[in-house]
Length: 196
Image (tube, rainbow, N blue to C red; front, top):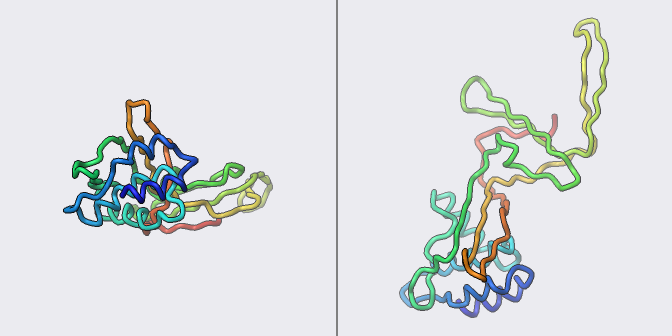
C-alpha cells in the first residue's frame, strides 16, 4: 500500500501533500483481504475526485453504497490497526430534489417534481438553461396566458451522492476538499424528462 500511496500522491499533487503523508503508514496487513486495501484507496482517491487510476476504488465505494453500507470500510495500516483518522459526512439526494442535479456555473437549473396518481411515482422535469423570458397573450378560450421560453437548454448532471471527507481532523495536517458530488449511476424510481 505504501507503493500505491507514492503512485497516487504523484497524481494528487494538487490536493494535499500533508493528507497523503498522513496516509503513508497505511499498508496491507498480511491477513487482510483485497477489499480492505480498496477501502484505503477510496480514502486516497476521494479527495481528488477519483481521477484516472481510481475507477476501481470508485466502483468499490458504489458497491458498498448499493449494499447499504458506508462509503468506506476497514482500511488497514501496516501494523494491522484500522486507519480511522478521518471524519466523513455523506448523503444521498433524490432525483425529486433539486439538490440531486447540477448545472454548469453559467446556467440555471429548472427542476419540477410531480407526484403521479397519489402514489410514490414521480415525474421529474429538469434541465439547465441560459435565460428565460415570458410571453403573455390572450386567447378566447383561456383568457390571459403566460408562456415561458428557456434558451439553450442542456441536460443537468445527476449528483445523487454528496460526501465531505476530512483527513486528520483536528491536527495541523487536517485536509478536506469540502462537499463533493458524484453520480453513483444508480437507477431512479422516478420518470425523468429533460424538456418542459
